Image (cartoon, rainbow, N blue to C red; front, side, top):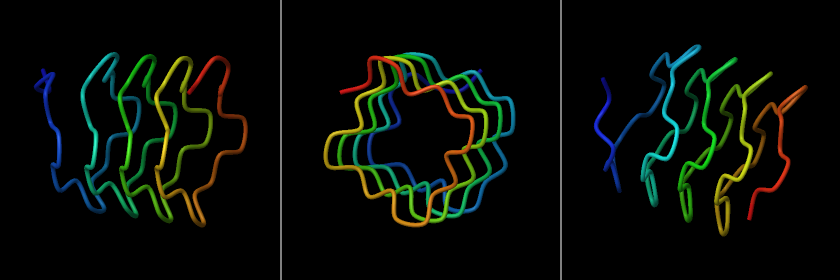
Length: 85
C-alpha cells in the first residue's frame, strides 16, 4: 500500500497505472511524465504538484484538489474531473 502522506515526493515517470491513491496527500509532488491511466485519485491532494506530461487518461480525479497544479501537456482524455477544487 502506498503511504497516505507523500507530500513533495518525486514520482517522476513512475508507472501508477490503475493505482488506488484515494485521499493521499501529494501536495507539491513531482509526478511529471508518470503513467496514471485508470488510477483512482478520488479526493487526492495535488495542490502545487507538477503533473506535466502525465498520462491521466480515464483517471478518477473526483473531488481532487488541483489548485496551482502544473498540468501542462497532461493527457486528461476521459478523466473524471467532477467536484475537483
